[in-house]
Length: 450
Image 1 (cartoon, rainbow, N blue to C red):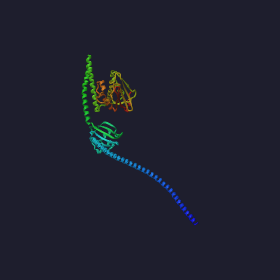
Image 2 (spheres, one colour):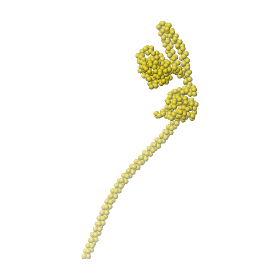
Image 3 (cartoon, rainbow, N blue to C red):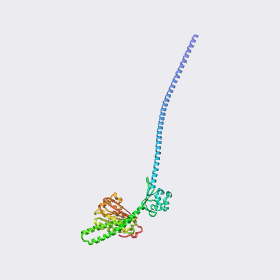
Image 4 (cartoon, rainbow, N blue to C red):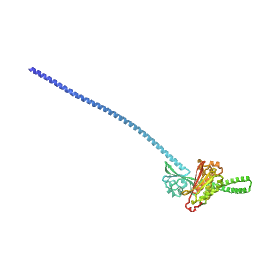
């Protein structure tokens, strides 16, 4: 029994040990299972972290590369800007140097200019005066530079100049100015414009003293010569008239007639030369009176009645009836101006042509126009129409006789009366000459009926 008990007890031990071993094995297996799962989870986490680290590393590398590229580009831009700035500074230095050279050249030109020059700024203060102008007015640069027009007007030597150009410095071209008794100058006032903005004013003074003396001598010579010629020509004219009355043979009469016409042409030329001499001497208008311009126009039309009939042209005078303002003019000279204008219209009109003489009253002037449908004036010759001895090429071919002085005289007559004269013309279609004369406000009592 004891043996059985021992056997049983030994069996229980073995069983217990086996149970314990099994339990331990089971625990180990369970722990292993849990450990495996944990390790696997850790490995998964590790793998995810490695993937994320690699992705973040790539991102950081890309960002780094982008930053490096930007830094390189910015560096290049800065280098380019640095070079451009250096070039700009160099160009600015060159421009400054060029500008300084140009200013120096301009000042040298102004200083050595043979005409007097005064430069005013945009506030009408004297900015610069050259040595020639200093000599003209007996001034020094330091005494006048920076002075205004009003301040200059108070200076006796400059007052004649300010009287001519005015305080507002109106635009003037070659207007005559006399200073120091005999010193004659032509004054021109020219605005200095830059980019459509007035920056100042240039006053140019050209010495014409010697020219005036020469013109005076020339005019005196022409006047004396013309006077000396007119007397024998008048005697020849009188003698031819007497001879023509006594001669009866047709051939001899025709010959005397040709000589008479030639003599008449010479007398007209002499008279024109005398008129020009008086114009240039400034003593042409000497007998102004209040009169009615319609009376003068009618007189000129009557003077040309024979020529109008001979050349078979028609003249229409659009006169204004009733009251019409009088004008103060030298009747003889205005009649001469009208003769020259109407004579040209008749001479250069086509046979059967029509000449329109129109008289109008404007606001402060009367206007006379003479329109023909004759040969007209070519565009390239229009600027010379009112100059001495000018005759158009088509006029020479149509009418060989003429001195080319008529329009020059007419222009000076109208200008001397403070009027204006101009024309419109087209070659082959005719011309219209206009002139105006100022109305005198105090001559209403001289209104006449015509």
